[in-house]
Amino acid sequence: MKTAGPAARTAHVPSEDWVADHSAPDALLSALNAASDRLTSEFGTWRTPWGEINRLQRLNGAIRQPFNDQAPSLAVPLRVSGVPDGAVLHVDRVVFRVVSSSFKTLYEGRGNAFDVRGGSADVRGASTDGSTRLLRQKLEIPKRSFDRLAKQASDAHIELEYFLTLLRVKTLALSTVADGWTESGGRVTEVGHCASRVDSEGNDVQVACRQVGALPSCLSAQLVMQEGGPSNPEKFECDFSYEPASLQFGTEPMDHFQLKLPFNDPTGAAHFSIGPDQVQDAQVVLRVYEPEGHFTRKVVIAHIPPPA
Image (cartoon, rainbow, N blue to C red):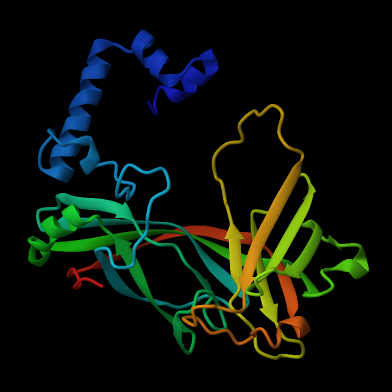
């Protein structure tokens, strides 16, 4: 398909149709042999069920997948260092593979993404040690596959591939929670008209922006106190798309951004530096980030850790 792509686009037909109509029998047979050889090399046999290759962590047939912290998972310790001050390391995607000593892929799935800020506390609560961030990479595995892998743990290792973006702040805007940018008519550079308010339950600050045209791909909001006081965790909304733009008709001209900044947990499980008693004196910080670089990193864990 890759080699047929340019010719198919020139002919304005789908790649599959171009291959079916124009490829020589020898070329089709060669492609089949190459696919068979790769399956045998990576999975031990070409008779590999589709579910053994294309795994998207679906635990059942539901459209909205249930997530359960008690489900089988692995927690891999990570150290992240070298993130410049003021920058944020954003994880676009994490792919992990459990590989046997004979290099057969036993399982493949996705890990949880995270963000790491340089020069300060981590964005999502990881502990710190100077300029190094200590994190636990969680890898969710369906129970049936987990039980199968547990029997082969002594003869396998984990390969993690990270697709990363280094972000820098481009625009920053401040507002008190109560005013919601009303002094400037709600207009904030690059993100349009914005507003903020405490929700009716008194647990979150709702922040919303809208403008004509597309909003930046990466925005964040954070509750902070003035003059260097305490702050709550920064929340990100990053949606980078590296696919070619597609032709669309009837596109909604307005783009929207909305986040909830929690400051009170009714269950008592979470505690915030800025709580209900301080929130009316707090400020909302909006940050617009732009990519400075894209890169990948690969991590190999020699031994499978015990379940989390």
